[in-house]
Length: 416
Image (cartoon, rainbow, N blue to C red; front, side):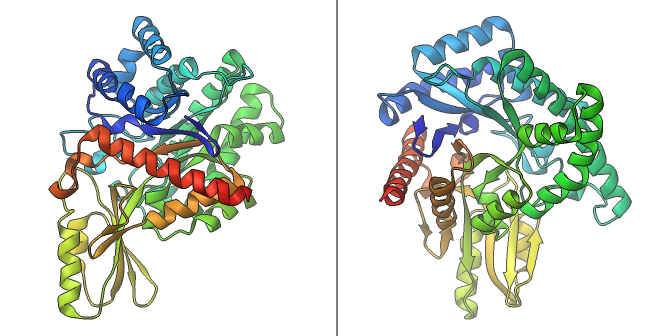
């Protein structure tokens, strides 16, 4: 839905269904009720997640036309897509395989191109008849623990290969913009243990690999000047600001945005999500209580990377909760864990959420409007501890209403 701080929707990766038939059935069951509860008098926005199989099926003309008609009949629209998980995302062990296939592969390229072709058809026009912009979020190139990441030659090879494949998509986006008048962007989503993990790494990759390789390629392919090629790259490749991921890495929102602005880089989408955090008391029994609280969130489906802050200010990274639980010692002062917990809950007993980071990001969005796309992304309802599991439609409604209310209050404070 259109709000004062941009288009707001929720990511449909919360719904099961890896085929289009199954996923569409889940949307038909949930979305009309959510639309009535959340946006009865205006169009309701969706962040569409399609597996590779579902994307192939939806691109079949009769399926795409049927979906367009369903969106129109229900006064809904798609303005962003989640192109990070390629394959199964529910009822299977995902873990690091969420990065498979990565950006070293042609399969990832073709999947992403297909998503953009679908999005170019689904994007609506605004009240003036102009197509709205759209984005597809994607993985941070690959998973760094698959490679000898500390070896400069190996790191350079992976960054060069993945960047070349990203540029194949950029060229496609330039052509689609010319052909359809749809301006779309690929939004890379840094996350712990990704090849791109932090804002600094995104900037370094962009300036050291994407721009020099892209300017050389695009000036030749499209007969652009260096300046025009650089502008096209910055237009079509942006950062997906997943609030949970940046909070886990202890990155402060205003500092991230300032760094991006200094380099002329943009945010394509905010993924509104919360992580778990807790400080460790000095008392051994109280520390054990915190450890046990984290252990309740140790489940086998998704990666739950942990970044520990030590008493000396050092950040220690663990690829999943089991490794962090085994390594806990007296030097650990705080943990932050990659577990997309509900937005509207700030307190889990001895554990807390990073809800304050969401509040800060939304305040900055109200003040700066650094993107026009906001997507609620809590996908872990099925693997939460039992006391936190609620009926799915009710849960999505609470998530969205929390964002709507906070955004409305923030905007009112800014206006006054």
